[in-house]
Image (cartoon, rainbow, N blue to C red; front, side, top):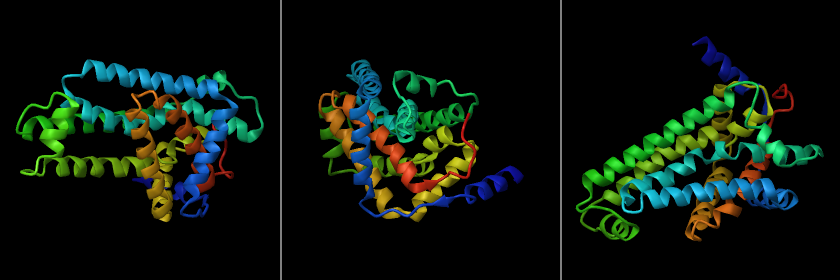
Length: 263
């Protein structure tokens, strides 16, 4: 209980900045600038993600009941995958040289805070994949083996509320994960704070800025879906673009200058 109380107090010890509702559009513009300045690390991250998605699609090509949850679960764990790109945006901000080595160093931190947070996100993503698969296989009136089956049997079925239930359960899980991670990972990379403090700070940000963060969540989902729809190739650009933009979201929303820098 003491540790939880300390984390709450620590999350209140630094200032949140106010932003306008349309500020997420500026984050996208700044993210695009960072990607143009150092395209190689970002595009390599995007390529890895796209190849992973393609491999998943091939392995589960006749099991779309599993694939639907896996792709949406990917959105939950994506923020930790691009940690190295936050480091590049931070280096740009500081006027430091940045390259692939900058991104790779972020994967070998001196402490385990990012590892712990990544495991928590992976647990949440796995939970949604299992929940989604169980819901579709247990309640769909016919087997769902491909996207056409999912559209016909789940989405367009007017005799059941399976699709609405699937969306609602996904939202119930995704909303708190988004609120917990929207600035937490850049904060953990940037400053010496505990995982719980970072999560509580992220919740403070969301509660203080419901309209801008709702727009930001919609942009993250919409652009990621567009990247997937473009034969997954779009992810090569979309993933690093959103990663760099997420760093600028953190910097605009949280004033952590009073905290010690992460080692």
